[in-house]
Length: 95
Image (tube, rainbow, N blue to C red):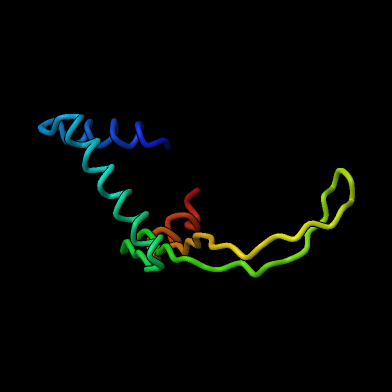
């Protein structure tokens, strides 16, 4: 699902709201989530999951084209852990 599809689905369920207002709400939610993660905070959405920041250690990789060794610096990545409700829905036997 893309961002615009999310806005469209919310608009279909809430016809009393303008699409521009829904777009602004989605924008604020994503910006707050991004800002919190950039600050190193954990973001938890009950029933859905939790986002956190983890650091990958620096490592030496090999370029597959020319087999040269390449130093890959440490970097931060976003880690997502599913919530209980989402995990159960994904793994239910009724699929």
